[in-house]
Length: 267
Ligand SMILES: NC(=O)c1ccc[n+]([C@@H]2O[C@H](COP(=O)([O-])OP(=O)(O)OC[C@H]3O[C@@H](n4cnc5c(N)ncnc54)[C@H](OP(=O)(O)O)[C@@H]3O)[C@@H](O)[C@H]2O)c1
Image (cartoon, rainbow, N blue to C red; front, side):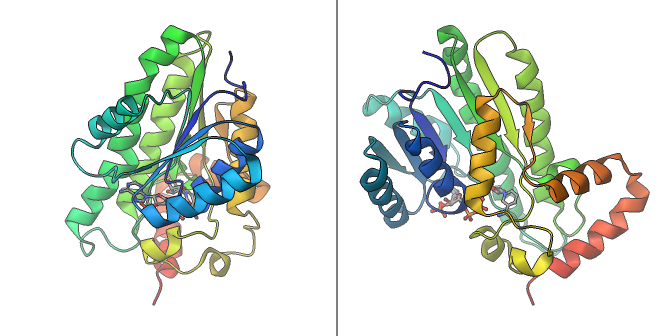
């Protein structure tokens, strides 16, 4: 069975809304059984109900806070207790906070690292040896166009996504020829619950150049993953912006990003 088999089970973190919920529809639409993880039980049940009704695939839900210490162990124990095997992982759960690092809560910023970085790395490292042993499977790690640049006024978030991109690029190369596939999905701004939690204006208000919906983002990420692509940046404008900012001298782009992220803060 290879990565593309419709019978491979897909574990999606942050599947109760936004891009993770869209991924649930995309993967279930191709017949994959799902394991959906998030903190919100009611929302997970809602997504599960809709997905089962539309696609008639098995859907398990695990209500879990991935930012707490020992989250990886607890998730693995739950999977084992319920005899749930995982073939494909979509590490999507994440959040951002807009504001100066000196003014945002230190605890909240560290929680962001626990979720966006630690939990993503933990889940990946936990399942990687068995994927390689089986010679199949794969991981989509959700980063952001923020991964390509430092982000004054959103410093920890941008840095956390830089980790995701670097880590996933490296594992894409390490797993070459093993049957296991690694893809980074780096979306630009798209309207989801992300902006509210981050204390940002809605994505639509930030730019006219971001037509992407959560569904379009998930479809692009899934298609790229199946093709074995290392990196997917959905949307031409997002690609141009990300690559231009990555290549530009930092002393030039830092004030630009500081102003952009300052303006993105909800009043
Ligand atoms: N929207 C954007 O503009 C944008 C752009 C680039 C990248 N991204 C990335 O895309 C990913 C998905 O975000 P989204 O836009 O879909 O935002 P979203 O609608 O807020 O979804 C975030 C998901 O993560 C879950 N989650 C949050 N904290 C969690 C925790 N501690 N433990 C387990 N699950 C947790 C949430 O569910 P619960 O709250 O129920 O736990 C929810 O299902 C994130 O990694 C984000 O950084 C988003």
